Length: 158
Length: 158
DNA sequence: CACAATTAAGTTGTGCACAACTAAATGGTG
DNA sequence: CACCATTTAGTTGTGCACAACTTAATTGTG
Image (cartoon, rainbow over all chains, first blue to last red; front, side):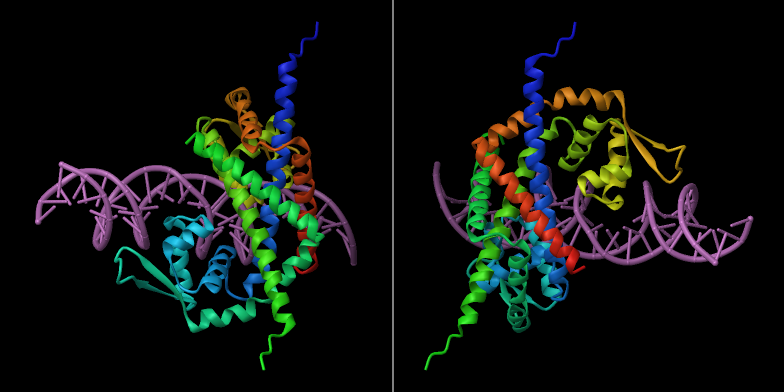
């Protein structure tokens, strides 16, 4: 007598859905990284360094704390990354006079100039992504919802 | 006379769209990782190790090569990861007799048993994700399309 | 004012991703 | 058969993510 408990099948379904989504997400994230990597190599930037430069180009100088909040990165990741951007000559680090705990990151001339050379990057990416604008928007919304749900779940079970 | 070239605005739009999508994707991927990390800590697995175990649970023993193809990971990532899974007692590594270059990864009893304990993971994730099935499906499809486009672009400009 | 709690940045250690390389086995071709 | 190209793992080195911790400055409270 063959006995396959129904609960087992249900679990398998869950497992399969979950597996498919995390695979897709993982794969998409890595594919994105790959394309950025090759595009950014000419500029001498890694992908996370590019994200930091983008926020600096947009907001001017920023304390490390703010960069971390915008990019959801902690000091353990940012400190060495910013040190590398500094030795590459793209940013300067200045201990804040108002609050000596804080360190302000400022673009150098070279860092500011890099923005012009970086303008081609988003164009290449947009072309590579090759999605109609509405899909673009849907994807972004769904990802945001997903992240929100996951963050809420993470906060509920810390 | 104020001259703002239209191309400039266009570039800014591209930059903004690109920035938004790569931020969403990056954030979603990291949120996913975070939830998995806490769930998997009890099992003594990292997220990539869990992905390897999932493929082994599904396919039984596999050569390193096949695992790498399924997960899009190269030997530089897999070799040390598998070594850690081996010293944790979840897998064994056997040099293939038929082809001495190949190494077959096999589940141990402990590795097989872990599957039962891991059954709760996808349920927690599905609950955390909290998306209607159709959104789930849309997201997966869009991510697949995105990855395909990015891979094609990467292949065109290697 | 003193002092404990909090905050900002940095450090250390582990693990993953990936590029570039090595070593050994295999396969194809002259 | 000999030799070279290919294939499979593995190694090395760089950089990111994150947990756990340290240090120094600031803030709040008795």
